[in-house]
Image 1 (tube, rainbow, N blue to C red):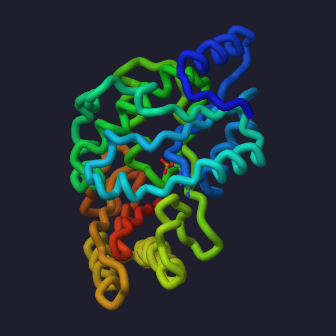
Image 2 (cartoon, rainbow, N blue to C red; image 1 turned 90 degrees about the vertical axis):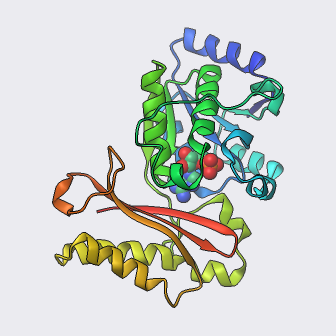
Length: 280
Ligand code: AMP
């Protein structure tokens, strides 16, 4: 694996490969890598000649400085995992390789898709995400870029940014990679204590229960109430549970209002924010 910390060295390497008609798969990450990230690397390796991973904890997408400070950083382990999984290039820049001094996120107009759920809970978050992904896509110039459906709203934002900026890349959504217990793998899980790790699969259970209730013919209001009630005697605090159309991300009132329906949940284990979603 070749490691780059400067875009000025990485881009010419990629351009040379693309001139040889090689395809490039790209997985942008914030590090603290786990098997969820590796499922994206595996897909990229199967579908492209070369695979690039970036590790960059992007300050402009954190609206909470404490969350940024506490974000897990495991650089050496990450490198080992990437080598083991056959990653070809790692781009691990410093802030100054991507941002000018005091540079802020670009302000995007995404209509309603960044006004709801994560956009509402974390003001400015998606401007930060779109800004960094746009910069990274221009540097790496991939044929295909892979994103996990764990951050489903993020994928919708990136698809929209790519359209607005007319970038030449395929955005490939990838299914959520879960532990055997059902818990969606996440870098933030590293901060859970043993008790919380044992309890956290509760969140996926609630989502699968919700899907089963729909199958039994329950209405959206009833499904939502069941989710909210389930949190009454649980160690987790529910931040939101929304049932929306996958395209607009706007809440629907009847399951028949949309062909592609997804349920989105955020719950807190102490100060750790856990995010998950499920297709109905
Ligand atoms: P992050 O490092 O959390 O920014 O994640 C980098 C990429 O990996 C994003 O596209 C995430 O959606 C994706 N990802 C993280 N966890 C998972 C998971 N459990 N399953 C699938 N994709 C994931």
